[in-house]
Amino acid sequence: MEEQGRVLTVPEALVNRRATRRFDPNHPLSDDLLKRILGLAACAPSSTNLQPWRFLVVRTEKNRARLRACAFNQPKVTDAPVMVIVLGYKNAYETHLEPMLANRVELGAMTTDGAAEVKARVSRSFPNNPDLATWALRSSMLASMSMLVAAESLGVASAPMEGFDHARVKEEFGVPDDHIVCCLVALGHALATDPFPGRFGLTEVCYEEHFGQPWTLGEPETLL
Image (tube, rainbow, N blue to C red):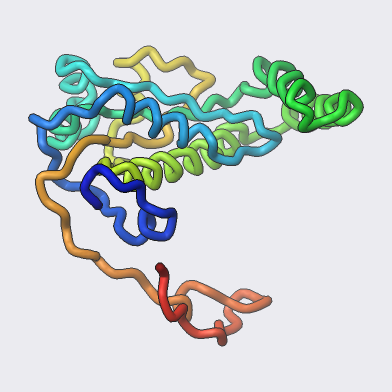
């Protein structure tokens, strides 16, 4: 992670980002930085632009201690000054479709006829979707990744966390049944930066045209 000051480019943020293990509990995160990170995270893409992510921001010492108890007592939950519970809202199509379409029409991004077509399509397909939880999870995880990259670009350390009791988080923080807990994201400043843990090359993770068919273009000369 770069020191705060220069905003990193997207390639720099992706290459430099680490899941921080140890946060400095005495280094707070400013309101302005937090708002920028959350605002950038909310620029993530989503199916039909329904934006089903919800960010439950936990900042007080008391509530971070409650969240730590839900996260198998991991120290970073209380060491980091900000914890974000990333939620996926399964019923966004019921409550936010019309406001979203109206906003797109007002911005000139869609015609009224186009909005009517989208509304009709969503009204047909979403109520019959047997797995809205997966739909909400996918978009919300895209927002989570956007949050991590945004934080890194602004000089803020982060750590995505999947080790927690989903049911207990929902109970402790009043999360309704039409929301799912996607992940936790710790935000703050690192006490130390871990070395790069390495990544598999493209020949290991890419195929060409058909599953199992070898990748032949090789590796990039540089990521920056």
